[in-house]
Length: 189
Image 1: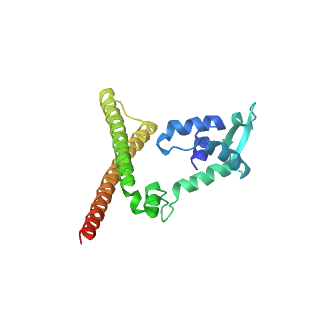
Image 2: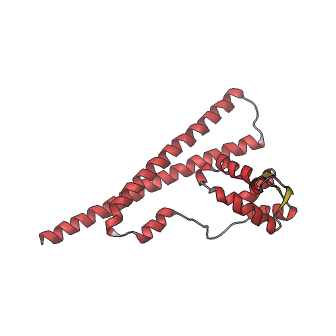
């Protein structure tokens, strides 16, 4: 849907969409193959059409069809329940063995630090944006306000993930300590 949304914003090539992924959705870490695979597939489904053939397939220019815009708008306005959450840590917790616990705690702590750093960067961007708006004192248009809302939401998301990982690390460390205590008690007994 992100590929379709980017093409609806403006027609583009596969290479252009791959670049825009990194610009607009860097934290999602979409693979470059996403654009290469999805644009032709969306065209086959009738949601996009090639409007200009480039010297190589990655430079073919696509635009959205009416069917594609309608499909995207329907997706944008719909709710998927229950929501889909694909969280790698949830998967790792599902397969965790006792011997892996210490390594997972280290990994969770590293991720928590990364989320905390991302939160600080996002929060700084929000504060700079607010300061700039106050200094200029001009009314802000739709696009600028929407960007501001998106940036604030991103900061909140990074902050929530940081707190979640901090709590997860605490719980895993408690489990490790309990295991070590139980092990030493059984060895002493």
